[in-house]
Length: 251
Image (cartoon, rainbow, N blue to C red):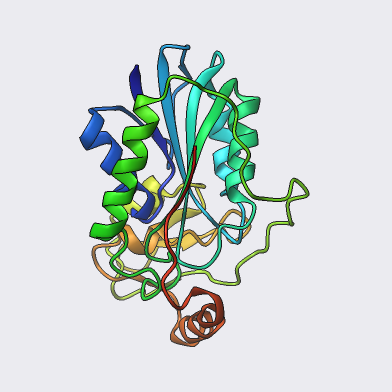
């Protein structure tokens, strides 16, 4: 079967796990973080979909970009990547979305990566143990001869998206106006305005999904989460994101 990997990864955590498949299987790659072209798959393909978990849901932009992914009862695997907090309904949500796009989801998994809002949670993941378990799962997926639709945890009455009151601020003196944050923002929320000495990036708050991509790609440390908000996030995550969570697989 032809292996294909489709992922959404604003801060690179989901991409790192996607690359475990890509490098092992020499897969065709579709990065839908910023945009994606219409793509068609058939029954001879197998497609791995990897998405991060935001508050127990999949990111809103994934819906728009998945509309361009067309399957023909194509065998598929969905992987929810979370920051050691909780998967919530994201795995079920992604399975149902893939099904609506013509894919037959016969396997699924939950993997851990550093939390996008506080990388001390899930730090160092996936580690050697995670990678070994994941490879064993992928090997079983590729050896499968039956593609019966599976059941995954979650509630179809998805909870509403909860807006995270975290918006990166711009350190004006550091901003070089290079435009990398605006050019690659997954929701086109970042734009440049003319500053006194150069262009400076700004954020359209209604479009921002607090994905932290702009902080990740900024080479001049011009975008940051305010210290008070960072402390509040760390405290809020402490209850459920502390301690080690293990990968889970459904096949």
